Length: 272
Image (tube, rainbow, N blue to C red):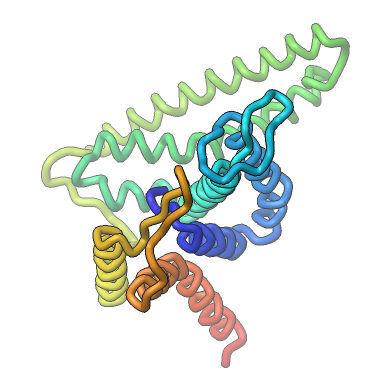
């Protein structure tokens, strides 16, 4: 979100799309084409319609406002950044389950980690329960697609009321269950299948190196790019290319890890 250099945006969007497809398969590709692409195009068109800054005049809009090259390109850059952020958060949702979050922060901030883990899994559980309640209501003739408009609205309100009641009861039961188990008490031990081994240490060192290198590149101006009043960015030097290469390596790290583990799993299943 902080690097508006065109190369950085393309790297981030490409790696995020690749990793999202690795995690979610065809469903991710359909989401990118059916939802993300129209939203990106819309965001790219909105900026030049309302922002008229820039020194390179292309034409005049019917309203009389100027259309500049800088506003168009900034709109494209902002749209690409928005799409990349959405895809990275989609990948985060697929990878970071509630048990992982509790493992990381359960001892440091137990109450907040429990609330955040419940929040992260709220939407998937809500969707699954919504389908369950809707199928039950359909069996008794009270689905949101049955009857006239007023009846459908009444059925929708009934389903929503059931969902809200179920969700609140589940939240209370989860909090009481965790409290009865002594969650958050000093000296409490917890079982976990996760272990911080040598591979994690090596990967953490790699991430820290990439982060520090990119931070140095940002401080040195190697990732600088502006759109107004005229487009200007960092010169194409070997050092600037190194900054972008390290940034690409950082963004490709989850893709490489996922593909490597997938290859190991296929080899183990084949017995070779």
